[in-house]
Image 1: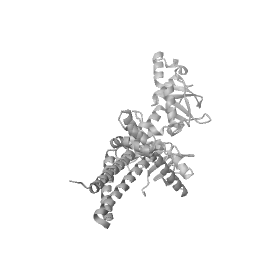
Image 2: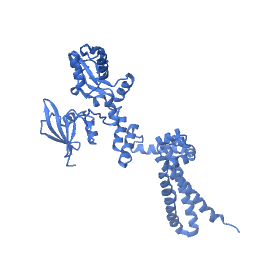
Image 3: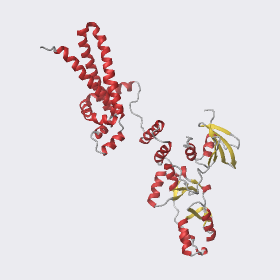
Image 4: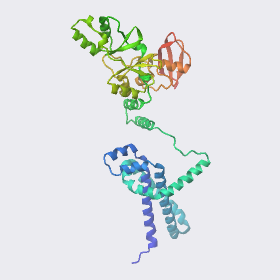
Length: 423
């Protein structure tokens, strides 16, 4: 029995080409959906193919170009063979039959089905196809390079920029975190913690420091009994010491050192020598980034630093706890209030002290007031209004309503903030 190859061979070739088309489509989807960070992690775990995927993703333009070239070649060839074959069978109607048949076959079996599988198994599929695709990219590299030159040249004629905009890896991580928060895969609290780590380079000690007006300081020239009493009345374990002028900080008094000195004095407080008990004070410029300050704390084995401006004037103080709170959120003990300077009200508004940092208000209420131009809530109002408004004035900006409650001289000391009801 003789088999007519002209009737059998074309359908077989078309099926093979459709399978190749499905392979290219699935490979494109899997490799573009695969996470490079995930592949780097799998490569460290010894997963085969992960490193090849990373190498392919480093040149995405060449990767996509090679896959599209291969996919179009097999699709066009399959359509041409199918059209020629069906013309012999159906005559002039063969073109319409071939168009309908190939549209369905390509759409279902070479596009939707492989891409659906690849999307649901991106990492596994990407590693499986990385070998053949790497060979394809290598073979088609000269052709793809020529196509890229033609494409870029054509686009440049119309003034279209082909260079990708610079995108910070930090911004990419932020975007991924925000996306997962929207999807419900990451809690808002975790978003703040992850974002806090990324913010350490961008924030300065000025953004998180305790303002000089809120610093509890002790005059070292006072009698030892008075110094002891003030230290016990304070809720802090580290207290700046000054002599004469508060700008003249001479050291730091640590509660533990004071207790040890009291034990050695056997109850004779008058014999305490504060100059021998005090520790060296560390000073930090207000422009120091939190990351650099954290490194400084680790290197010098200290938790406390006085913040100064360019003229050496004291602006505030920063502690290790202040920096850690930017990562893990508010750290409270039995002496702390919930969020200092921020008092939520039953009606949804918030009473805010003017010196309260915007970041603390945002975290306490899960708001997003901008803190680019000002550190404190009062500073934000002054920046937006370009005035120092009187009590009773109300303003709306950035989607929030601000009501001035108190003012002392040229300082806004109290505000009521709420979401704007008109939004």
